[in-house]
Length: 422
Image (cartoon, rainbow, N blue to C red; front, side, top):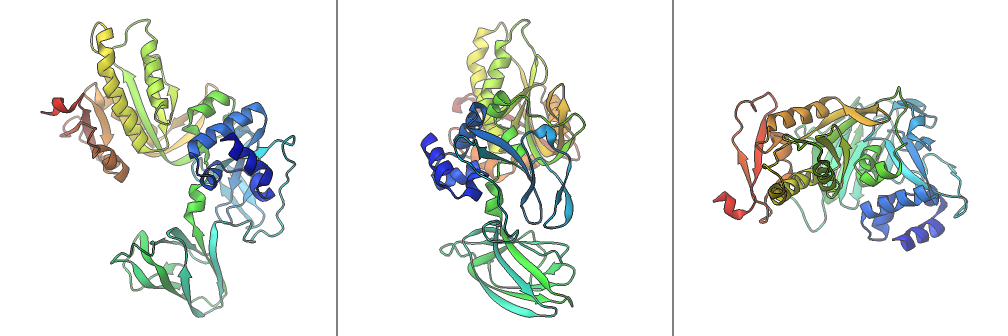
């Protein structure tokens, strides 16, 4: 691991070494991204790397403002290249990168052209169309998600380029896109994602009287970012950098956050080991843990799959712990996802808003009967993969009062073993 990091720091081009992206490095060396991130955090604590909080412009994606500490951030940043002010979101355009210490390598940021390919790796294709011009293009891009954007359009189109060996009957071989105020695809019904085969012929029609610039951005590049929300779900970050919090008057939004709320309903007075056990189980499943009280914890996860795995782990191990206590331990457990806001409370990062309230509601409705989770979250593809595992024994109980609500909840129970289901 450290050999790969050393090789990258000393041999990578300066524009990459100056802003070391752990997931990008992990893919280059076929390493575990989480392990690389943790190694970078440790090296930063040791002084070999420096944390950099990059405020990326939503237009050009450039890190036009960077800070060494979260406490220096404001909720607004400015991009001189795009001449726009933009807001920061904890899980969207606030990225954690790492800069080598000067004792390892002298680096400095150099931007000769804001639109050069070297400085805009997220842009896979870009074209200018004159007013009222129509032009065909042959797209030959690696498979994956792309977004078609233009400053002249009020919306954007998401294209999913399929692998050449996996054609889809509903995928497009020819795609016609018209631009006048917004993108429209006359032959297609409105949809979130347009499936396209590997070699798709794209016809663009500019109905505007002025020239427009269109670009296809590769969303995979964005998925390589370690956002502030992603690193908050890593316990090592909280352990190594407890001082990294927002300013006292700052609060940043999160578009989506996953919480696992757990409470000991019948605590044993003076017993702290059970709370420590809860924390260890959450951390074992790639979650960070915030202690809410002497009897409750809040798990922060980047993946709903890991949140459900942690809940499963708690249920399985609880059966082994119960013989050690005078009476069986009862847990309230709830999982919720949604938008919220991160701020500082009592010197640490805290959460408030829709998702946090939903997690508390799920916890209260659990009442020791099992896990309460929203129906929509349970239907997510990665959750269904977990439930289809032959080693997972579970029952979804009928949702009834007091679970009925405008946002349906599901009471969900794990079994101790296969024999418990029969």
